Structures are given as structure tokens and as C-alpha cells.
Image (cartoon, rainbow, N blue to C red; front, side, top):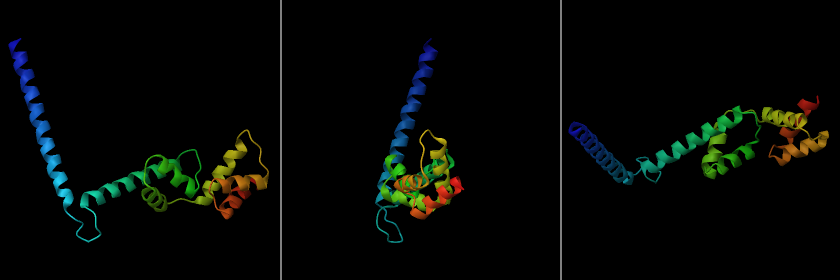
Length: 148
């Protein structure tokens, strides 16, 4: 029994030392955030890394949305990413960096409406797609593909 308390005490001591070591590393990393970007762009290196990481995460989210069942216009995808908490700059940069065929997204959206319970005239569906943020030409293309 005494051996178990000794082992438990050793584990607790190791945990405390490990935690203190991590806190020291985090503290020294925070101190290094005052180092400025060598290219003179302003801001600290850590803030630039944070922005790159946020943009990378936003880009991954954008790609995930585009691979999913829903269709997005450029503006609706930016809005969705901003809703998730990304800044406007991160969301816009992410959406502009993904490879996407907005005409194909318009087709996907138009088909989704035709498969749903509501009925649309050709012009009504074009208006709906424009309301979603598709350009007039994207909306016309999407509706033209599903109405043939």
C-alpha cells in the first residue's frame, strides 16, 4: 500500500514538473512574439503564423463545404466562413484560393431547388440563384443546365 502512494506521488510530481516545463516553454514562446517579421510587413511573427493558420483552416473549411451536398456561391461561402468565426479577410482569402467552378455550383444549387418541394419557373429560379449570390451569368448557366 505504501508503495502505491509512493508511485502515485512520483507520478504527480512528474506531472507537476512537466506542466511547469510546458508553462516555461509557452512563456518563452510568448516572449518571442515581439520579434518582428524580417520582411518588414509589420506585426509579429506569431501573429503572421496565426493568420496563415487561420486562413489555412478557413481554406480547408471552404473545401469541405464545396465537397458537401450543398451548393455555394462565392459570397454565400464567404458568409458561411464568417459565420463560423473566421474574419472577413480570412474567409475571402480562403474562398479565393480554392479551385472551384462557380457555374457547377450554380447547377448544383438549381438542381437542388428542382428536386425540392417548391416549384420554380425558369426566371424565378434564376432570381433565386442571384439572391443566393450567384452572378447573373452563373445563375442563367445553372438554370439553363437543369432546364435544358
